[in-house]
Structure formats: structure tokens, C-alpha cells
Amino acid sequence: DIQMTQSPPSLSASIGDRVIITCRASQSISTYLDWYQQRPGKAPKLLIYSASSLQSGVPSRFSGSGSGTDFSLTISSLQPEDFAIYYCQQSYSIPITFGQGTRLEIK
Amino acid sequence: EMQLVESGGGLVQPGGSLRVSCAASGFIFRDYWMSWVRQAPGKGLEWVANIKQDGSEKYYVASVTGRFTISRDNANNSLYLQMNSLRAEDTAVYYCAKEEAWFDPWGQGTLVTVSS
Image (cartoon, rainbow over all chains, first blue to last red; front, side):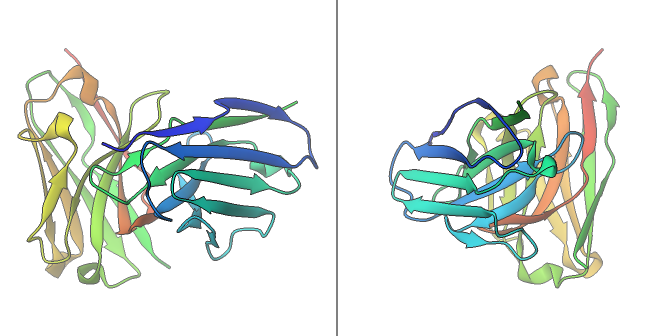
């Protein structure tokens, strides 16, 4: 199974900050990497697919990059609604696996 | 608008069975792979199973293989997960999701609680 490791596990930041969350795969997954946001009590929401493609309707302050084993999600200027848990996910091989999540909290 | 609505969750005793369902609308259901993803209380996301457009291929995470069965009814735009021999560790919110490598959209989830 491909292991997905996110860092940091949690992060405190302020409104307007630039934030970077990283995700590392245990083997190369090309660009089969997606990012999700989950707010409390809600279903996950797709933000970025194929490592760097912005899902329709997602604000442009979100961006993704990387290929192979190392990936990142950047939020350029944090807004109040961005405080949530973020997950990466690989679809390169079965079983599909997720990172453990990064909790983004208000400082 | 694409929409997925899960149902069928509830409380079941260890060793028992339950079937959860997912009703799809707003997209051509028969054209897509579909998945179930679960989330134990306070924990992260775990992919459970997926099924090809015509149902001819199905894949499962190791922890549910032999106990869970994914199926679909394309005539009724519905996805199912039959769960047998349930264990306490299967307690989770179960989400269905349309799959294109990535998952979008997701349903609101249905809670399955395995407890005596």
C-alpha cells in the first residue's frame, strides 16, 4: 500500500497568512494526488485534483504543486472560512489512500 | 447539480449486518466509477471500496475484504454497500462519492454504529 504522510499534523495561522501543507508519498505516484478540505460536521470537498488543477468554484488562493513523491497545498492569504482539516489522497494504485490530515487552526 | 444522498445507517450489534445506500442525481451515474469512503469518529478518511461503471470490477480495502460487498443499480442511479460480520472498528460515517481518480462530489454521509 502507498503511505501518504502529511506535515504538519496541525498548524496555527492568522487571517491573511500564507500557509503551505505538504504531502509525501511512500513511492512515486506521478501526479495522481488530490487535496480536500473538511469543515466540522461536513463532507470533504475537493479543492485540487491531479496535483495542481483547481476544482471549479474553488477560490484561486488555493494552489497545488508537486509530482512523484512530494506535493504541497498552498493557501496564499488565509480567510476565516479556510480553518478546517485538509487531506491529501493518492489514486495511483489500489488501495486508494489518504494522508492523516492537517488541522488548520486560528492563531 | 450533482448530488449524492446516503441512507440506511444505524446501530447494529457486533457480528450483525447492514446495507447502506446512496442515491445519485445530476449526472450520468452509469458513466462513472463510484466509491465508499468512511470516517471513524474523530479520525481521518479511509477508502473502503469502489466499483466500475458496469459493476464488472470491484476493489476493497483489506480490512473489509470478504465482509463487505459493493454493488450498484444503474437503472435506479443507486450505489450500495452490504456490510456483514460488522465489528466495533467499522463504526464510522460512510460517504459515497463519484470517482474520477479524485472524489467529487461526496454525499453527506450516513453513520453506522457497531455496538452491543
